[in-house]
Length: 125
Image (cartoon, rainbow, N blue to C red; front, side, top):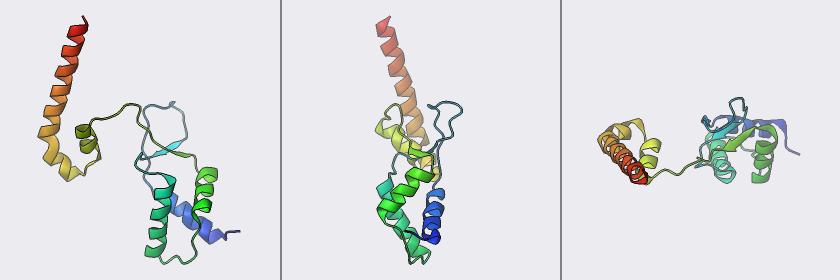
């Protein structure tokens, strides 16, 4: 049986993750979404680092971390409904500074994408 301080350290760690909105879900969902780059195993590895940084000596096992995540949190890992190309993915996931550097390349990419879509639609007609 885990003591309350260990359980609370897990809760605090899980709550430290920034959630993202899903525009693909029902409007009134209460589920929170974590970035698709995460999974429970990765979160547990980060929890171990969190414990070291915060001098937490008693920590949970991965199975207990998983149990608390599944039983106490209404969270899921976001899965985009459509794939992004490498350029779009890189742009959406980079820092603000990198976005400024990539802005011209990204805008040209979007223009080319839109032009290709227009040509494809014209071919269909």
